Amino acid sequence: MLSSIGMALLLAAGATASPAPDPLARTLEQKTQALFDALVRGDKTTWDDLLAPDIAYASEDGTIKDKAQLLSEVTPLPKGITARLEVTRFKLHRHGDTAVATYVAEETEGYFGQTIHASYQETDTWISFPAGWKLVASQVLALRTDPPETALTPAQQDAYAGVYRLTPEITYTIRREGNGLVGERKGRAKAPLKAELLDVLFVPGENRIRKIFQRGPDGGVTGFVERRESWDIQWTRVPAGK
Image 1 (cartoon, rainbow, N blue to C red):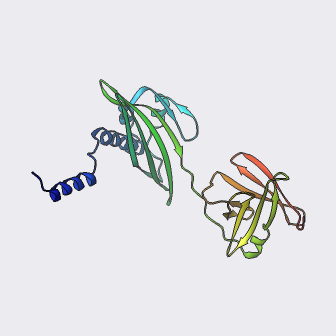
Image 2 (cartoon, rainbow, N blue to C red; image 1 turned 30 degrees about the vertical axis):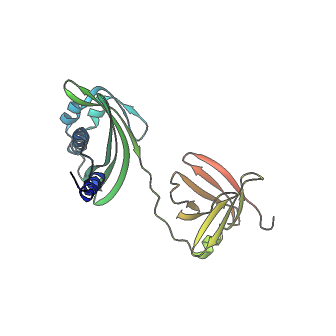
């Protein structure tokens, strides 16, 4: 019989042991990486082999593409452009002959001597056919990041300080704290404000929204529009003392 110490050691080892790797997850991750590598090379053969004939592909620009459209886009990169796409954070959920994969594709692109980077959250659906696993659906979302920050002078920051009104009950206050600006909507927590450009501010982490400030004939700030991509919400500055 095992001693109590031996049993405790076995239980501890079992509790800390890593789960066995999923062979299918590894296989489909490799196939996904192979698709990206083939895309960079302009290799249609790999894409033709791994895509189901009736694939539905939702690209990052919102268009839905079929297999013929996808294959037509697999071409060698133009001179002056290089790219590397790496599959990261790959997770697989299997349901019988269907498997749903989620992952982030990290793209590093050399663009005529400059380097740019993009990240894409992707969800793929694979089905097991007699000829092997085929990609039947994919959705791509471009992950947004905050823009670079532009430094503002104290005087430029002070120009935005004040109270702005959406409705008689809803206000937004901007003030300077330390070396930066903070904004606080009535009833909510304050948050830092950064400048993308002069008169274009944003809250870090809220990268779909910009606050674009408006000025009157004298150059003073009169309000701002809260731009949510293509939609603007108007906020009007409350005159001091009111």
